[in-house]
Image 1 (spheres, rainbow, N blue to C red):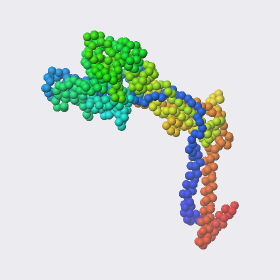
Image 2: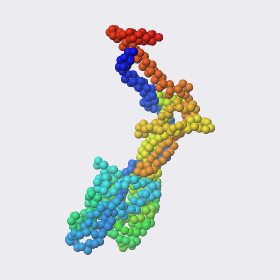
Image 3: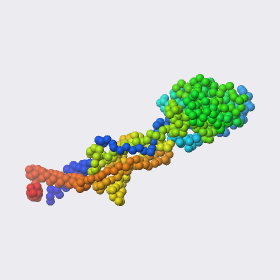
Length: 549
């Protein structure tokens, strides 16, 4: 019986785990050579431009969905007003109060055509798209402070449709928005007429529209909730409601910048399809520029204050108002498209002279630039044939929030399609698509292993995939085609197999030698202690002979 047999291999177990880890480390080192960190050391060579375009301004435009006014008109407040119109001043009403406290409806109400305009071809051509370049918020959002974040304005331009009923907090947030430098575009008259209270999904009348309500009873009250305050910072108040044919267009003949722009685009006397509904009177001419005066059909109807489209400065911001109910006809009247687009442009940039309707309000002329270059993995910029491992870096000047045809997009992925022997009659596609990895927020990298490529000319086609935000919109496009030559010496092509096999063979030799030497040392120690028998001596003599030879 040998020593190994009699001792159950206990001596071998002493160095079994170190041996295992030694083999593991050597193997990992051989297979991980291609994962050594590297960085470009040369300058890029090829620059291309994507059809995707950069948004020249952030998404700083919001349109408010007037759900509070829509709720008031949904078999609610006006049913109550009609039923109790004859109640004298000073008398309390305690019945049908549920009509003054209703569940909020998620609708556009009288502003339905304004919402639809933002989904029209006209808006799309201007790059004004709901949910993309234009954020849709509702009055609950405004009531809860959605126009600001950490005290700073979230938007530069806020657009209102028919906003007759607002909470006090909402009203004050609009006022603060303008005071802090924002542009508030009001498309419809009868704005900020009455106060309501919102809580837990319910809307209640508070004060205005000739009524007041405290939750237990209602009584006749004021028509305008913020009459003096409106004159101060909005510049106007509701004049009247009427039906019929009262207007035949607008005259834009003032020195206001928007008036100049509209006049150069459409002319001075503009025929409009608006006939009459509800209008505001421009009562505050201080810090106010008239854009255009609405023309009355009957001169006897002209009021003391003008009905006008105007721009009113309040502290650091501005209110731009049509003076009438533009939502009634915006979908069919070019004037209001020009008016709204020009107002948004002014609110975003502070000027209007460098823009012409209907150019995109958010520029479509700044192309996404991609710069590509090939590198030897352990060298610099590839200047000749590639050999061994290489990589291609694709640097973009933008990777997200890219504007394409009115949609905001993100760069989702970059891939490379490698074709071998491009100078032959029948090009052979490489087995796989090369998937790029993100290096940082502006660089993607494609690793290329030329060991598996036959020597000769190759073509690398680089593709980018852009995905839409808030939509399923996506597009693939080729952004660059690179040609290069592969030239591997015969021994280089064997490296992928030679390195791991050589490493494993070296590890095996080390293990054998280590085991033999350890066994010899162990037996000699036993012999010195006088504990060896005849069989052991025989093993030692045999081992010495093996080592000697």
